[in-house]
Amino acid sequence: MAFHCRMCGTCCMYLGDYIAIERQVGPYEFECESVSTGTPFTAIVDDDKREIYLDSTWLDEHPTACRFLRPSGEHILCTIHGTSPAQCKFYRCVVMRVFDSQGVLIGKVTGTLALHSDNPELRGIWEAALREIPEWSADIEARLQKVLEGHGYRVG
Image (cartoon, rainbow, N blue to C red; front, side, top):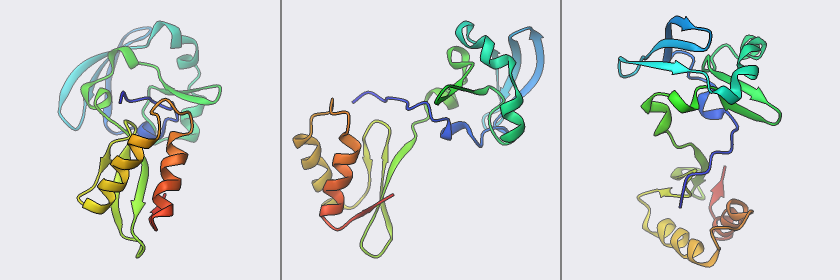
């Protein structure tokens, strides 16, 4: 199943220290470094996001956010999506956490609806639910949550 970004910005709200802007080399071009890997890259603000990029007031309220993150209506957007570093391109958010009846975290679900768990019972329930629920269902996450809760798991 393909990853579908919800454009909530949660993944980048605490990445302000992970992308260092070394210097601005043009009105919308920056020499940067991925701090976690030490990899340099050139960030260019996407043509269709230049207007929202110019308003940096949102960053004052969110000082830990990536410097290239901006609100647009109900969404929070990466303004350098086209030139973002590998650490950003490969990131997949956690959309669901699954806890057992004792409140112990036993699984995580990423934005691709892939379950990451070593618990064989949970994996079996998850795989059966995915076979029953069409992946195109707009409410697939809510339906999966209901299935898990029906088996005594807590989902958060």
